Length: 208
Image 1 (spheres, rainbow, N blue to C red):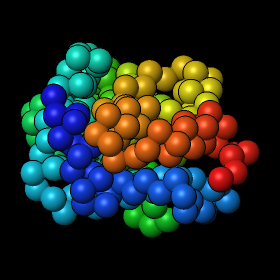
Image 2 (tube, rainbow, N blue to C red):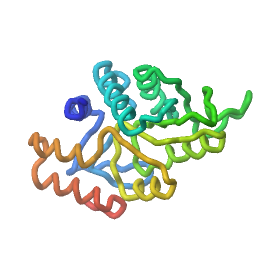
Image 3 (cartoon, helix red, strand yellow):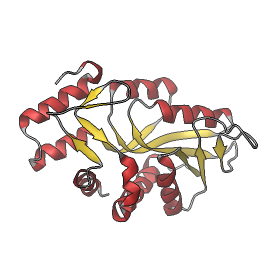
């Protein structure tokens, strides 16, 4: 597994930016000392290959029953394709909503009611979009055995939402792991570490 190398590459290429002194504002209105744009990973061949290899290893361990890899549109699709190739498994992908033309499909690709599907997204914040994809897959008769992603903030909202949906979740990288590595490497000070830790405890009410 290449977790340390992946984290280093994400930060070095400004795919993940940590800025405890000048926080970002998300579309939701949440203020945050971290900004993540994992869509950029597809532009770095060595990085995306490490991610795909580690996701494949993780899925074999956590979801050995998996028979299909699914990508959550749009950011999860390229990573699902790479993982499906490495595991030599069929692939599907799930749109946010059904097409408004043709056959009106929301899910592209074939699966049966006996298949065990693992859905992949790039980033989990609250889990809303990927859990919508889970519901859409189940509505079409698919069995989702779990969800994986490159990175998760591990926010309380996400834990609660996955628990309510009764969906197993296995991320490759998490916010706590990122903080630990950044503190150990000396990239952030002890004071900055505390700022980042406090945000994680209560992000909606956090103030810098």
